[in-house]
Length: 463
Image (cartoon, rainbow, N blue to C red):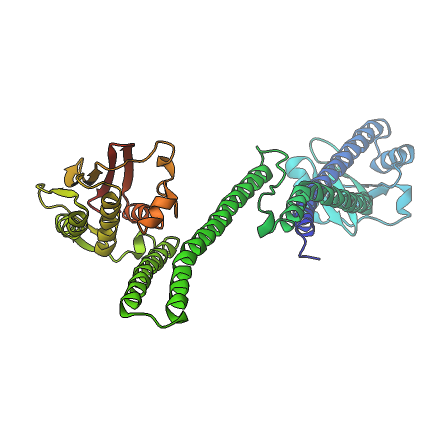
C-alpha cells in the first residue's frame, strides 16, 4: 500500500494536517479555559460586591450585623452559587439557604489578600471562592461568594468533545480531499507511465502527451520526449552504422572469397597465382583499414578528453612527420606536397598518435582527390593563442550540397569512385572526432573543380 505515491502523499498530508489541527485545538482549548475562569472570577466578584452593597444598606436600617445578613441573604438568592458573610476575623455571620447550615472554609490568607487588593480568589474544596470586604474601611467583615468548579469543567468537557469531533471530521474530509487531489495531480504521471510502457526500440517515434508545457509535469514530459528523440536518433545512427559497416565489409570479404575459390578451382600458373594473391593482398589491406577505422570509431562514445593518453605533443614535429609520410603517396601520383612550417614551436597536451592519424587522414584524402600535376599544402601557424593547421589542395573539390555531410560516417560524395580508391567514408569522421576530443574544431571550404581547404583549430592547452 505504501508503494503508492498517492497513498504516501495522502498520509503525509493527513499527518501534517492532524498535527496542525491538534495544535490549533489545544490553543483554542487552553484559551477557552482561561477565558472561562476569568469570566467566572469576574462574575463572582460582581456578585460579591452586589451582596456587600445590599448588606451595607440593610445594616444602615437595622443596625444589626446578624439581622442585616439574614435579610440580605433571604432577599438575594443565586442558583448554583453559595453566599457567606463573615466578620472581620473571618467567622461566619450568615450563609445562604443552599449551604444547608454548613459553612465554607476560607483560609486566612484569602482574607488577607482581600484586605490588600479589595478582593481575592481561591479554589477551596471543589469551589471557586471570591472574597470582598463589606465596607471600604474593612471593619465590618467580608462577603464570600462560591460556585462549583464543575460548572467550568462541564463547559470545557463539552468543548473537548466538540473539538475532538471537529478535528476528526475535518481530518477525514481533508484526507479524502487530499487523496482525490493527489490522484488528480498524479493522473498525468500515470498517463505518462502507460504511454512510456508502450514505447519500445521499434516504436521510438512515439511521444508523450504534453497537457501543460508550463508546469512541472509538462517540463518532465518535454524532457522525456527530448530523451526519446535523442534515443531514436541514436538507434537510427546505430542501425545506419551497422548497415554501412556490413556493406563496407561485405565487398572485400566477397572479393577475398571469390578470388580464393577461383584460384583453387583448378591448377593455375605461377603468374595467375601471383595475380590472385596480389588482389587478395589489396583487399586484405583494405579490409584491415576498415576494421582499424571501425575500432577507432567504436571508441568515440566512450573515450572523452579525460580518457586521452595526454602528453606534451610538438605539433611542429607531428606536422613534419605526417608531411614526410604523405610525400611518398603524393610522389607516386605525381602531386606536389608543400609544407609551410616556419612558425615558432607550438605544443599542446594530447594524444600524439591520434593527432598524427587525423593529419594523415586529411592528407590521404587530399592525395586521392587531387589529379596528377596538382598541389597540396600543409601549414601550421599560431592564431589567437591557438594552433591552426590548414590542409589545402587543388583537387576536384566537394559540391556545396555534400559539404554538410562529408564528416558523416561512411558518407562518400562519389560512391563508385571512392570505392575504387579504397575509401570507406570513415577518414573525415575520424578526423573530426579526433579534433573535437582535443577541444578543437575543423572547418571545410571547398569549390568544385578548384579544390578544398580543411582548417583545424586546436587549443594549445587541453581543457
